[in-house]
Image (cartoon, rainbow, N blue to C red):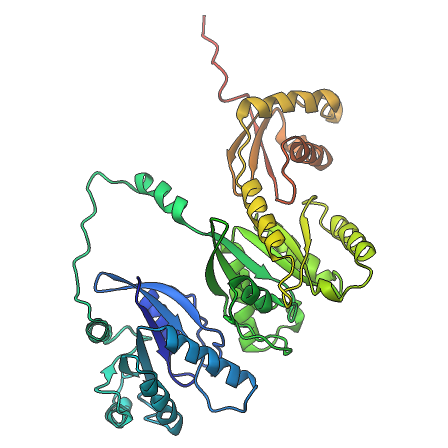
Length: 462
């Protein structure tokens, strides 16, 4: 089983910077703003040739019971209880504070092995704080600079020793192994990436907690609780799924605070890296312009889309409400007709299986490939039903079609004058494609190229 290492400490000591340094990513949001991280975030890393799971946590603060800071502390304590090793981080430039001392006692009481880290040791101003760290009773501190990558070798040595592991050499890669040979195995094992997006306070974190069956995310009535895009893995009926909880997306003009700007950027990155995006709506508020804007962004990025109507248990006139919402969604998202619209209640955990089934179906459609012979039989029928127009009296000819890629389904049509083919006729072909090959709810790319069928036999010269 992969060991887990939790990074803990008070706000703004550099925990997220260290997380990014160890995982080799920029997954955790980093800023001078204290308390930016709220939910615990996991990432894969490697220490001494051993695979490790690193957990980034919220800053530890003394706070009133039930407050956001208190809920953040509970998430950090949960991470400590799951960890095989705790990295307790202090800011060597600030020295040891009363908060450091308070939570050092919490870490000692957990019984978990601890490595004390004095971060930001890149200058002389850190010397006094480094020596102060001894009084925390957590052993000799490791001097590092997470921002500049200093001292990480010493950290790796102490962390491996605390875990009872020895460094090992990485196995040499076979000379005859190519990236192409290894790619299929990696792809088959990769979980389906699903991002949960929507406006603030739609219930995204509550939905993720309900699917996971645990209080993985901080939830509450306050909008904007989630900041990082946090990934969680589940296995649903044999399907490996990685869920990304994201920050609420508001209109750009309303996003003014630094934390929200960072969170919004992280949510947009989650959409770009997802395969299926679940747009969560508050059923009581219905669908608003911002919801349609988010959905358009998802389709422009080429992601598969599923719409979930949350808080459905509070709706009284369910049939008429659902009918009205589906009509409004169909009108607002005419470019992707047939998007699945699933009523759910995250709080009471109703409709979750139906939602996940819709996600799996959307992913299958997003990956669907149409055989070339079937595609060109359809093309012949589509042209016979509705022939291409003849701008300036010259008939346009579409000679051949192929599907070069999926994710989303992408088609290329070879025609005589691509620039002259009207958008209305391209839309006709796209909608006909969608209907003929059962491709609802996903974007379809139709590209036009000039010239003859490149796969047709070439005529011999006499």
